[in-house]
Amino acid sequence: MKLYELVGEIKLIDRRLTLYEEKYGVLSEDFYKALMAGELSEYDEYDETRTDFSRWKGIYETWLRRREAYAGLIREHGVTEMLRLQPSY
View 1 (tube, rainbow, N blue to C red):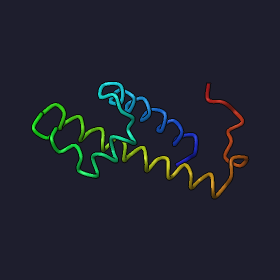
View 2: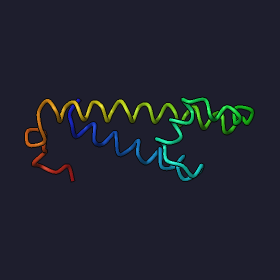
View 3: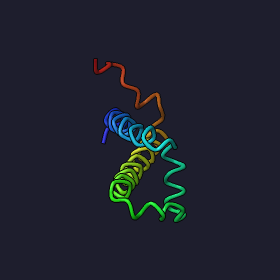
């Protein structure tokens, strides 16, 4: 995958995460840590929340993988080599 494609995906995922962050009032990183630590189990009884939390978790994990891939490409090639000189707009 090209770096600019990763950036596009990351920004799209950022927008999706923002919807959950605004709805529940916490940043995705803090939500994910609490969820993985088992601190949110009391919300399992609510269908909407359980569904939201499942989706939010999946979206955040995808974001983490994309960020990792981005960081790997930058480490391997550097910004100078990966920089697009012809903007897409």
